Figure 1: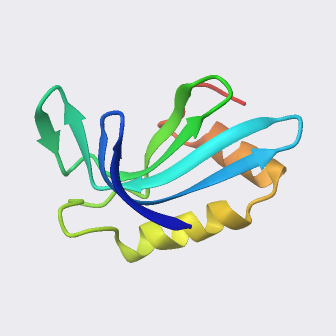
Figure 2 (figure 1 turned 90 degrees about the horizontal axis):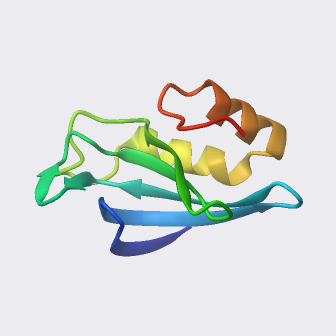
Length: 107
């Protein structure tokens, strides 16, 4: 995990991110973000973890472990979710994404 203090597309106030590559399954970028920038309207109520599919260059899933507001930085639950993503094997990762309500598509 490393701190970034950057934006990733519309995901703002990114506090940390990791990159995961599953051999033969693709590369993923996972980040904790504090708000979502909707064309200049920044909403801290839209926060959590985002999983980006680096192979397809697409958002795979977002608002994971969403908090009431991302204004005060990542929550304990968001840090715990990031640690879980760091440790997940492919079957766990795939199941988590495929069963999450904010997944854009199945993997």
